[in-house]
Amino acid sequence: MDEKSSSTIKLAQFLKLVQMVQTGGEAKMLIQSGAVSVNGAIETRRGRKLVDGDRVDVDGEIFVVIAD
Image: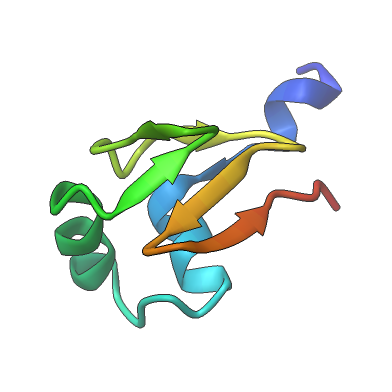
């Protein structure tokens, strides 16, 4: 497995990590409502894989993914 594939996180998991939601169900509702965009485009897939440098916008609050 190469390093790139191991440093991804799903959008729903990321939203929980940054404490925008508490549960996967809340993440699903938020994402499907169209309130979340990734790199400037509305994203409705909670399984969208994020990589280092992706910008996630939730109702005007911007988070940048930083791989650990």
